[in-house]
Length: 321
Image (cartoon, rainbow, N blue to C red; front, top):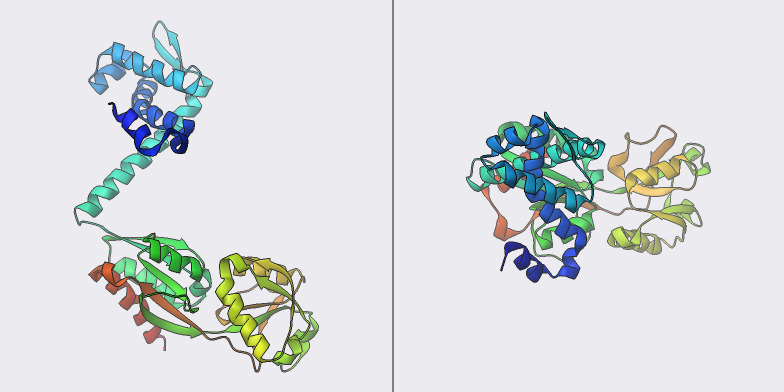
């Protein structure tokens, strides 16, 4: 059985799909195409690749059949790319460079010369100055560690940790069930974002009762259900009911809608000072949703590199009081 047949048997033709099969076949011939295109000669390309010219011509022919069009115009002095061939050369060269980079990265990590640390981070947490400062410090003191940073909401980070998609999560403790190790960095809270000309923005003191009946931009329940539940419980305990006009899935989108005057919203207190100029962030007397910002990781994958990362970020917060 050939390797291609094994692949189809293992994954199933339906799941792999026609595009996947074409991609696997195409990658085999891209290297030969790129060399021939760059040298402008099948003869020179065959010499470079240490194969006979007939074999190279056969591979190029296979590639043209796979793509459904001609890549080269054959001329007495050599070959010339068609317009479609020129477009493919640019893409194919980039693809092969990325494949080479992936292989080199794998070899470095596999040999222990480079370590990889995958970090999922809540965007709101980046508003705390010790976070970017800590990331820069870790990079400078650990040059052989590759940091792969992925923005994600806190609930997504817990799910990514459970599946092994990330090694460490920078997230808010929302009561998500887990058996993870953690290190608290700082305690955040919620505040109110308002358009600067909103009636509530003019009040000298803002109390939770002022929010009763107000039009709000809420949190996307599919992505931030636990956070929304915490807010609802805090409002209910204060005897306040609000009207949610729309939902958003990010702080940036929320602040943009507030700036447009479409409603008011709860945002992390850490957003204060980093919001659109026509938006004000206010503290609400009698309303609090404590949000511990922590680093989370699974005990079974704890490594010296991971612990150095934890200590570096925690140390930045401690140094800044």
